[in-house]
Image 1 (tube, rainbow, N blue to C red):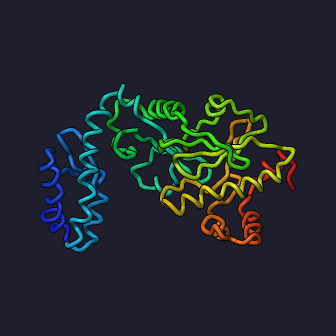
Image 2 (image 1 turned 180 degrees about the vertical axis):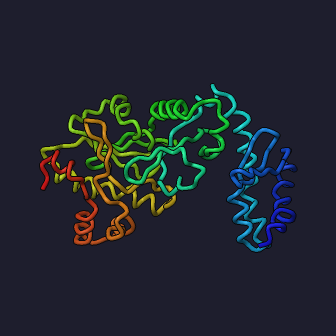
Length: 310
């Protein structure tokens, strides 16, 4: 696609839609970084390199469909930047942590995300009436608060989120709520254990299959082999259910272990291609289940030594 066509013919459709919504729009270029952005209402800078690349790769009759989703996003982005990100007290009140897969935050706009074991990353989001709003590098660069303070406030807010339902599910206790940030409580296990009075002197197993729920079970060294098997059998169920209903909502297939020393590690291989049927076929036969679970469980040498496993 001719770049001149994209800039002079296609892009005015987007800027016109935004102006019709009451925003002022300027197109800008950062020659040093070789990036393109929109300056909205003279204050909100939004990078559009991703959109430009998509337009360059598409035929003209697909351009409107590519730009249409950007209109509500940019309108909401402007509202949030003007009413929340520039107001420290409001930002401290609404910011939350959120666990995402590493693939989700592989885009350079999430370079600030904090990496966790098992292919997870902790990001910052706003708890707004509108759908989940995950913050990007360019927004954080304009915030009056530092990244460290944002993560501190966000995690405290996430730790304090109310749980609506607590129920037993096999060897697990399940915590769930409508909030999409429940999973990120696992980023601060000491706070979780304190709040829910969890006694786990030998460490805590947990899973985070979807963003509105987490499961936990104190480690039982006297029955560790059976416990690991039970955790695998019961832990696959919420992943199966979420995959069937909303596959994009699955956060992790792994079982994690939090040690008394404060370290995190996955004790499974949720991304092992050989065991995918365990999480996609609810009618899997018993023999295949056994084979998959044996391959799924993959504790580290240090974990095996801790619990005297072969």
